[in-house]
Length: 524
Length: 60
Image (cartoon, rainbow over all chains, first blue to last red):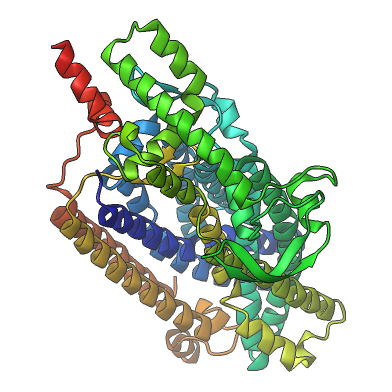
């Protein structure tokens, strides 16, 4: 059997690198569209301040891109190094969107980023705008293909298991592409990225306004960020609701865990706002509930029930028992591929094969699993409720706090009064980390909530890992965390340095705090 | 390109080169020697053992 320590370390390594990676990604996804908006205004109006805005915010965008690029590549390598069984089992499907992302989106994005920075004096205004637009398209296409891959892990459509090759094989590429989970995750995630980019620009602009420097530049940046941020955060909330609906359809355990819904409630179920969760006794000591809301979000109806954890576990117990039959039939087929009876039995039960494999965490031969072992495997099918419940609420709470902030910021720009409201500017400055925290919490809910599966309902996590040495995992984990922390510190240092310099760093002579070389040449 | 831009490009170039070097070093030290060859038989052995093994033994 695979050691639990090995599984935990592999999970921790992937989670740590993914979470570091996603500190860089949402800013890239969001800021690129802000650059498109600013440059479009420049092309339409010819006002040079908009070009300066594009160049200045583009510089901060470039720092983030340079520091962030390759932090995601280690994740793709980890599929091969740490998750070799996973890669064999589902590589036929999972590898396709990742390959398309590299060839189509990342190459487009990287090429256009080069042209964006070095093309200002070589391209016409319109050509440069097209480059910025293509850079944005490339960035978002990149997110699309990654989230198609991730969406398939959450809801494995368009594929089936082959006992001949012992792997999942793709049966319908377009079902994988148009997987409702992937599409809902894509729009929700990129909207969160847009909100992150908007918050970044809003916060730094607020700082300039508080310091009363580069006021015209900062006011325009503030206005763009407020409008774009308000639209983005509204999209995040609406599309998050859609994402909740797809989770309710495809991942009932995740839905029940993040709602701390132990019992199936009569339709339409209420939304639990807060609760005192008692995991030991599998109940809530008390809860505050809003009637109907969960039923509407999770089922889009007032008549459909949302199953509670106890009912889900009862169903999963049945599935584990059928899974044992599937494992035995598969075993017989491996011994004799022409065994017609085994083939028939396997076809009938193969949907539950993954549930049978859950027992492999505790026993070498699934047929020897006692009722106690089966019970442990049943309990494994639902992730821990407390972290899911509170992480989700913290994410939603931050989303609504950002909605309020962007709403107030947008309202104040309509009144041209943002500069007269220091409390608003301070709030915008202090809210800077909010979208990053919300994004990380969102990924936690999505991925921790998928446990105990790497591929939901198909492949258990403990069977996905490579049989590496624990020492090498400790070493590489420490190496990754140390290295990524250094990258983060360098990013913060460069961001703070160039944000402090402000648009004066462009050396145009039009802004406060021009660099000394420009001042010197102007003096000469 | 002004002075601050040139400094930034220099710093980012150093960061990128260091990044590639550190990633390569991490791979060299911790991953290079760790070969995990996976094929249908090893998956069967991992997922189905020991029943599979017994069946193959009895077949032989």
